[in-house]
Image 1: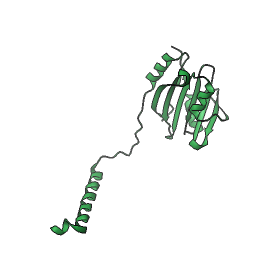
Image 2: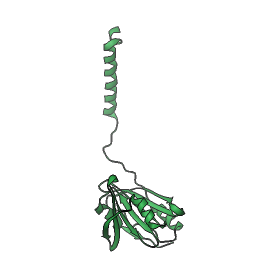
Image 3: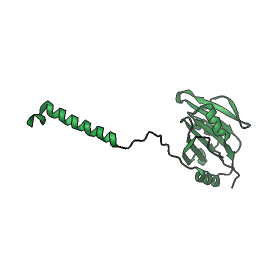
Image 4: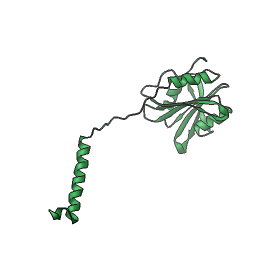
Amino acid sequence: MRRFTQGFYGYAVALFVCLAGAGLFLLIAPQSREEHIPRLDYSITVANFGHSVPYGVWAPQRDPANWISNSNKIAKGENGAQVLTIGYATAERQHAMFAQSNEQPAAGFASRMANTDKTIGTQQVGGATWERRYREDKNQRSLVRMSPEVTLVITGTADWPELAQLAGVLQQRPRG
């Protein structure tokens, strides 16, 4: 009995017992092969944002097909302006975020959200013209739309068609 508790044999027996225990645990422990992305409802956040800003708030009228809204918040931007952000996992499981604010200067807000101030062209979505911006080192694409009252930015690692999908479901809600 002593030869199994000392030296190489003791080490080998202890190692075998540990590996057998770990294998048994992995065999009987429940495992999920499904992805789990938490879904967060943004409707209350959008309503609260609408009560705190002097313009009609933009928000998705519905989520794009197979997208999961997984974050939302109201934050303070520069000069005390309110910023609404809604984050998504897209159908292709890339990241996309919608942000809006009346922060001034609008170009500064757009550049901060897009992580670049370089415009690489424009894109038409639902009759509206959006600036395209791209930051290669972060693989970040952005659509930017500035108006006198609010700046809208859609940004993330999603490709241009997916970003356009989100832009296409945005709708301005009446103030109130």
